[in-house]
Length: 129
Image (tube, rainbow, N blue to C red; front, side, top):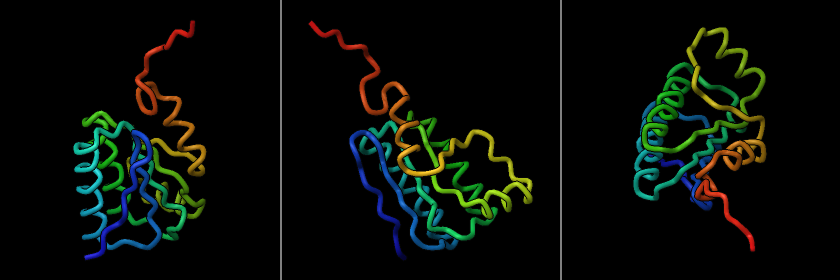
């Protein structure tokens, strides 16, 4: 089974999904993300889905569940690159996506993570003398 690469960048994990996923791969990705958060102590997770033309209800629920689970492990999740047609479909399906943090692109997603204390830094204010 193919696996989606998970890259570590500072205290964050970066996942760029470049191909449509079937249920087994998205389930394995969820497990891989949670394992990597636990193993690396990552404080942020950025999942880019800009290459996806279709996000079905199973994938949307799995991403939402992964976001909730990652939060329980102490990591903030941002999903980037949702296309307009995908957003319309998700709303039309009536899916509960509350709790999912989104951004238009990877740069905006990293800005959101960077603004969260403890993701890229310790959250402490450092004094300069």
